[in-house]
Amino acid sequence: MTMASQDTLRPARAPAPLRRKLVPDRFLPYGMIGPAVFVAFAIAIVPLAYAFWLSLQDWYMLRRPTPVWGGLVNYRQLLQDGALWAAFGRTWIWMVGTVFVELLLALPIALLLNRESAIARSASALILLPWVTPFIVLGFGWRFLLDSDVGPIHGFLNAIGIAGDSSVLNDPVLAFTTIIFISGWKGTPFLVIALLAALKSIPEELYEAAEVDGAGPVSRFLHVTLPEIWNTIVTVGLVLGILAFYSFDLPWIMTKGGPQDATTIVGIAMYKAVFLDLRPAYAAAISIVMLVLLFLASLVVLRARRKV
Amino acid sequence: MRRYNPTREISLDLLTLVVLLLFLLPILWVFVASVRPETDITGAGLIPTRFTFEHYEAILAKRPFLIALKNSLIVGVVVAIFTTALALPAAYALSRFTFHGRNFFALLILGTQMLPSLAVLVPLVVIIRQIGLTNTLTALIFTHLALGMPIAVWMLKGYIDAIPKELEEAAQIDGCGRISAMVRIVLPLIRPAIIAVGTFAFVLSWGEYLMALALISKSDVKTLPLALQGLFDPYSFSWGQVMAGGTIIALPAILLFLIFRRQLVGGLLAGGVKG
Image 1 (spheres, one colour):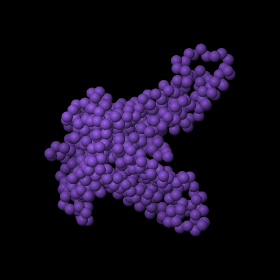
Image 2 (tube, one colour):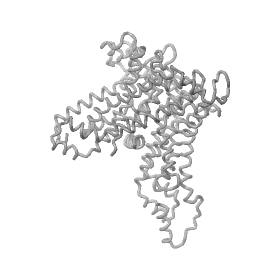
Image 3 (cartoon, chains in turn red, blue):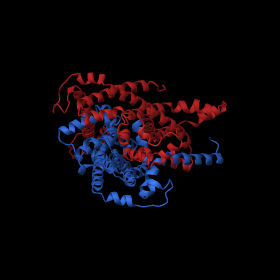
Image 4 (cartoon, chains in turn green, yellow):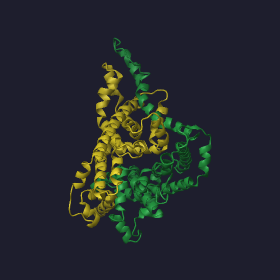
């Protein structure tokens, strides 16, 4: 469009300018977008393709320094790897749990912040803090808060009888539950901001009409608010679910996957396969299976969107 | 809801404050612990009474921590510059030109945004190892470009879309070339967005943990998140120092984000959530 209008403008100028173009306009956009596309290729497409190739190799670094063709050997081992499937099982609980905590916290907070007061506006800025604080800080911060000697939150959990003398992070079930909660807490701000944007775009007339029809606050929420923000919930929930599925930082920093593998989600299992077991090809097969499972799950979730 | 009711508003404001305080309490506690004497952290109740900067002095006197600080700054700044330099022309091309493969390229760049680092961790680490770049900041910088570039392209495209094309056309009639029209007209108008995008890339790189953990093991190329872990590991460590180190990492991220919030939140939502 730009090029067309430029061409039609050209005859209006009396003498054609003598400026010689180094790059004709036809190639210019490719030159401009090229470097970014190159980087995207190098950090996304090439690694994905290489992961697929690698997953078909037989490469146990303690035995041989270079990969040899192994066909489906990794996938066959993967199917029989009970510990890995346990990690996959934990990852679904982790993912659903994280998104559940996020929804549970974000929905009331977003409704509370959807007002015009100065406090509500500053609060919707400050609410972002957990989202922007790096995992390493939150991980160590929570380890401090839950420490059985010095942690104030451990003291609280101890007082109400959830934690015994030792930290919740030493108990398999409690550690997993706690870290899921922390993971949800960290992701909540993103959902709050998205929900706020959706809430603010609901036309006022819908509420007025509902009020005229005699709808109370609860029924206004169920029949006006919820349908209007449903697609945001599904889409952002999916994004947050994908992030949770690919979690590594938080459980690794807080418990290194322990106690007794209780927080070993699949990301950690994959990391251990490369760096502790020295089996990069097997780890590549895990990452391919992760991609496939995630793709299938996303298709299912996207069906929950309302057709507008 | 629509009728203004002062009592209701004030009580909702109070409730907001309480919820906000509870929500941010874990982070506040990290800050508070970093300025309390070690003996108070371990034994003197929840309410801080004495303040000290001894933990900050102690970790800023540690060589490994200072080296990590320097490395994180180098990586963050270089990533910010490269991210912006790559994203700006790409965003301009996507906004102003129609060309074959435009949608494909847009999808490719945005698609990388949805790809978590963990999904490409194994192949990237193997490739980087084979070309002999483990334990270099170069490799880390390269992987960190993935963190912010796609969203940078998306955000800048939004800003460029909002600038009327006629401004550049006018400049071109006056004899400007395409590129000089972009540099002289568009660039000054989107300067705040460019700064925001660069800041964003810096912040993402500054706190990044997984790639650094996977690629770097030598102490002279460690970045801050790894150095913080180093403070933790020895047999005797100080909670105050770990929390002070955490604060040093968290504070720039939090402050820069709050300053550029207006530009960033819009881009985040558009880039991450556009269904």
